[in-house]
Length: 115
Image (cartoon, rainbow, N blue to C red; front, top):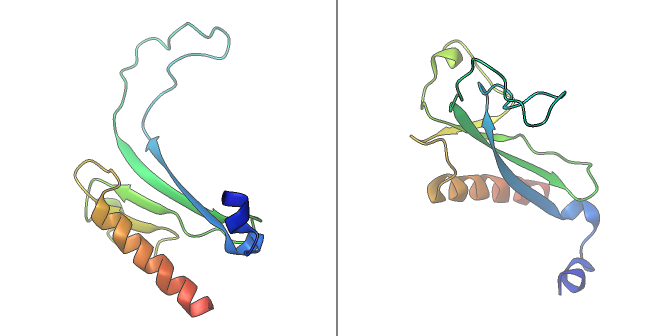
């Protein structure tokens, strides 16, 4: 059924969005030399953020990533005027319905401007 739907659209008009968790402080849980050997002396860091990455089918357009963190106003953003990403926050750094709806509205407005 999908090929039937896609035949009316060009590859530049078909977009895919996918989210992934980024544990930005985590150390490797093993080494390259031996797959089963754990890295000694390290605890698993659970500092995470969620990334939503979006691009079109032919790769000609990649949207700014949506980053979801835990802090609404992180100290590291104190003197930052602009970011190359969209930033949102909630207590677990997870994608939730409200963030998804806001992102879809932003995407819809962007597509509407481009016609």
